[in-house]
Image 1 (cartoon, each protein chain N blue to C red):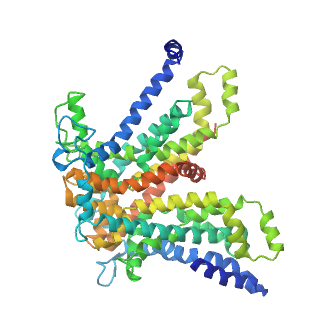
Image 2 (image 1 turned 90 degrees about the vertical axis):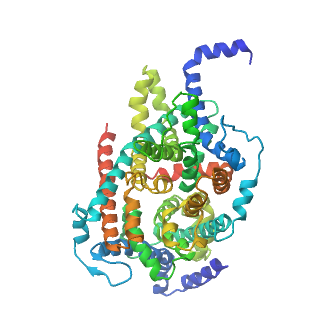
Image 3 (image 1 turned 45 degrees about the horizontal axis):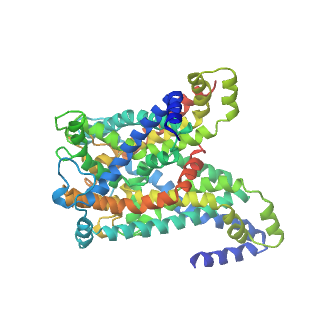
Length: 312
Length: 286
């Protein structure tokens, strides 16, 4: 009902023949979005930066401190300096472990499913299905599978591979990282798989026919036709996956709690604690800005590096 | 197929069969966690940990489901959380479609001062990682008095620019003839938008709706930040509380996981082609 009423007023405005009446119509169309955009996207960017220049506990008055919050991050004698780089290091570590797997495994699967493999539609469904679950559901399932004493993973390691040692998958290193990467791979490869399959569809069949006539073997076909044809998809997938991995939060929050001993505490986890547990809004904003800027730099760098490789 | 023919086939094509077996094995590994979740959820708590592992419960029971559903609201109100998720995701999605398509139509088809500059600013913010906006948005939402209300989950996301971008691209691809004809017949811009352009844009709208709904339904961090009242949580952060309550009662945990997974899995199975098409469509812009 609301929609119709809204429609009515807009139409009346549009029918006015006065020049200003017509000129205002486009602005009426963009106004609803623009209001929300300004309030919740544009303003927060500027406001967040201003906050990062202040000390503020959310209750009293903000106190302007210039770059102090940023300087604290580089001062090992402050809590922020101590924990921020630990969390950033952990986040980077996860990016380095997860992104190569999250790109190459779906790429390999896509190449396999793109041949006329029987049952490929069912396979595609199975690999994609976990992706529709929320991170909370995924974490609950994997905490059960990875339970040290009762979990399915340790059970099969023993009964199939004869490994009797009870691996503390979520409580000790390096297992905690392996677990986080594992559940992330299980959860998210489906999206990239679909993107690669779509990318493969876009490569003209005539190129493959030409290669076959020229007597190219399958490696040469992959190297000189498939791979260059997939470059735009590969670029997009790599950048988006990297950004997603930088945002790691739910998996460690639900399974390791950032432990053991802050070893899997990620940047986003620390920022949340700093803002909503310690109520240091300024300091949390400074951390968010450093993390955000790093993410932008990495994305731009990836774009540059991979675009150069695209030119053949 | 006779055995002999099958053997011939195998001899000629063995690398493909090897590949098939490998993918099959991988697919079984991929499905196993979901099947084990189902299996555990149907076992009485005393039988969840019994060696050797039984994939098919000896005495399947729904007692775990009954137990977690019976939990009163001060405990873990799964159904209430699910309702919160469903309600806010639906309203949010409907509003995203309306607000984004209105704006996208103007950016695609109308001439107005500042259009290109505005659109460039919108696109520029696609680069800004959302993590930079969490703290300031929390404060803005607090100032609006929206903490612990549905408004905090429904409205802030409406400022997103992805939907505007996606729909504008789609509108640009629609031939203008129909709109011109309607204009000559005296239809105003709003009527043209509502009766001609929107119906033509259905595929893009369905895609945007699915991804907006799923993104909201699965969002973890934002509802965790803006909701202090356990009653107001959505399902994902609710499940974190739920997990804290049942710590190692895996039968009940898996029943909860099932309840959270089932609706989306069912929707996915029925609307699969929209997901697949949607991902390809949204991905191609890269």
